[in-house]
Every structure is written in C-alpha cells, then in structure tokens.
Image 1 (cartoon, helix red, strand yellow):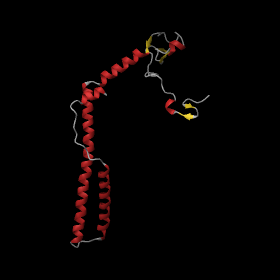
Image 2 (cartoon, rainbow, N blue to C red; image 1 turned 120 degrees about the vertical axis):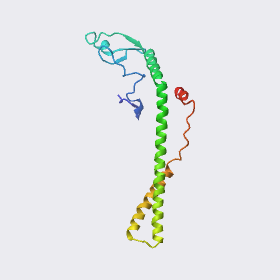
Image 3 (cartoon, helix red, strand yellow; image 1 turned 60 degrees about the horizontal axis):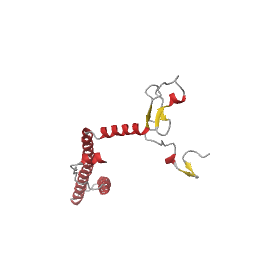
Length: 174
C-alpha cells in the first residue's frame, strides 16, 4: 500500500489529503457540533448521528451538496460585492500606492542630501581645508550614495495613479 500523495513512485503532495468538495470538513452539526460529512455523493449529514446513533445526536437532517455550496457562494458573492467593500478596496489600493511613492521620494531626498554633503566636502578640500577624518566621513557618504542609487535603480519608476472609472464593475466581474 502506497502512502497518500504518492502515485507510481512519484511524490504528488498536491493530491495528499486534499478535500474533494468545496465545503468538505468545514461544516458542523448545529445540534452536537460534530462534522457534517458526505453521506452519499450528493448529500451532507451529521457524522455523529450516522455513525454513533441517536444517543449522541438526533439530527438526521441532510442537505444536498450543490444546494449548500450555492448558498455559501451566493452569500460570499453578495458580501464581497458590497459597495462599502469596493470603496475600502479602492482606498487600500490608493494607500499602498501612496506608501510606495513616499518611500521612493524619501530615498530621492536622502540621495540629494548625501550628494550635497559630498559636494561640500569636495569644496572644502579644494579650499585647502583637509583633515584626515574627512576621508573616513567621505567614504561613509560615498557608500550611502551607492546604496541609495542602487535602491532607486532597482525600484521601478512609479506610474501615474489612474483609477479606472469602472473599477467596481471590474472587481465584481472578477
């Protein structure tokens, strides 16, 4: 006998202990709290009532699998497409985009400051004000300039934020 998830000596972890149906293992009996399981291919029922008898649970009610799946999906669809959620989605997207913009702008400002300090050091050296500590400090500024330049080069140039007028419809459709 082969372990679950292995077929023809090839490991298939995507097949190991995966539920076959959408709500498998997620429903509970309202009377006793036991799992609702498929009692045949088309109906869910209380596992305690089926397997342990009426001493544990008297709930013999069953529900068609397709009916309960449709109810759950309809409820999710209705709640996820609520206008307040769409507004929240748009606002969260805008907030995330603005945060990315702020991070890039902060790096650009810091790079400008570092370049200004380097130029100040070079100007001081040209005017004859040289001190051995300036070399160490200049090295720190050059390293930071390289780091910021690399960071800005790797970050994509942000596109202009344009919210499509029918973004809510697109969200509903997807």
